[in-house]
Image 1 (tube, rainbow, N blue to C red):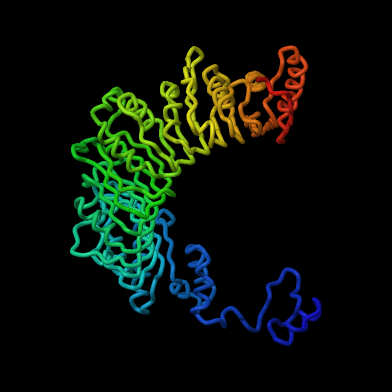
Image 2: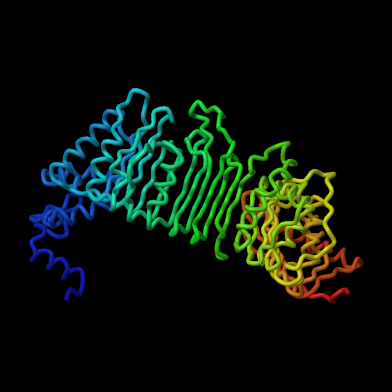
Amino acid sequence: MLRGYSDYIEYMKTKQVCREWPPAPGSYISGREDLISKLPDSLISEILMYLPTKEAVRTSVLSTRWKSLWLLIPKLDLVASEFPDSSAFVNFMDRFIDFSREHKSCLHKLKLSSRKNVNDPHCVARWIDFLVRRNLQHLDVECLVNRKFLEEMPLSLYVCDTLVYLRLHRVSLGKFESVSLTCLKTMHLEENVYANDVVLESLISSCPLLEHLSILRMVQDNVKVLRVHSQTLTSLRIDFYFGEDDDYVDDFDKKDSGVLIDAPRLDCLSLEDHCSKSFVISSLSSPAKVDTDVSFDLVGSVFRNVSLKRSVVRTFLTRLSGIRDMTMSGTTLKILSYYIVHEPLPQFPNMTHFYAVFYNSDLQKLPIFLESFPNLKSLVLELEEFEKNELLILSSSNPKCLMSSLEHVEIQPISGAEPEMKLVKYFLENSAVLKNFTLRLGCKRMDEEPIIFMELLRFMRCSASCEVDVELEVRVTLLHLSFRFLSYLSIQSHAFPKKRESVHSLWKICEGGDDRRLLISSTAKTQR
């Protein structure tokens, strides 16, 4: 048993690891044995696997034995831009493929980022064709190229039974006879071009273990209707890229375009699609979380034509009525604000969390939206900036959730405009079980913040125990001011001079830029 440093030195000498221990200052440790080099090649390659590929390759200069050890690493991560030119990148990969073929080595993980010019040869498909036949498990291919010069993926890719992870960025997926991706669990398809709708549909539905799928579409990807059929899928993201760098021409024929999703186990769905005209979604389970930014091909001045799309919108909302968590863009919410003029929203009995971006013109319909969320617990509102003369008229009715379930409300940003403060007052005076109310200030001038604080002190509070957090930016520091009200806080008019003095002293601290959290507890008699 080694008891100290001296014992360790003697141990090193008996093992004859070095001639003298400790080594002389400024000199290298001269060893009689290279313990690392005595390790088997397989173990060294496992160690090198934890290094970036670029650093692992550099170990080839250590000795003759180390020259080819990095080639045994079961992963490869290459970025073409790190090579002097395209030719050097291609030659490097070709030599790696030749070595793998000669030594029958297996690569488990390949991450490849290539940038191609018009005259560069097509090599990526050839490399993939070889590697997927050798038990490849993780494939990440990124081709930074104009859509006119995409490489078509080899047929062998579609029948790789060992693939667990697949990411394809800017490639072409042609027709195939069969698909057998029996182990694939995660797939990311980004800015690709497909032979037709059936190719993409078959690729998705032929993965019996697929759990996570993201599709970033291009406008000209040859897919009219995106169909997602999966009995195992739990997470799905669909987005659109408009291809400004691809000599983009908006000739997408939106007639009969749409999205059809049949994934009964889906619990996370993100839709950002302003090209498709319709969305048909199988009923989602109550734990599902949905992030939606869709316009049903209604944009700009034609928003008012939502009456022509009532059945499409109704079907979309009905299929989502069982979810518990929703994030909604301002565009989608504006469409719904026109929709509710013609017919009511369906009920969302399981909805507990709602994050929405509200345009000012739609904010007056907020109580109508809340009526559809009877069990809502958390609400986050993101507002656009109000003009000075804008008005806000809110319904005097109290939605059920305000009286029985709403516990957390957050509003951002707040600049102190009259409509914003009216909205704040609406929640404070009508939310009976509110526990936390957060205001994120976006004031342009420091002198606006004390005014907001004074307004907060004037408002009646319906909740007997409510914590109000005011978050503001003071120079470059985010300062938190927390005001905890243990009862209804009512300040009589004659008490304001004293309170105003306290408020200004607080703001004097704030102006110092200190990063601190101030907590004020106050109790007052309830004003009935």
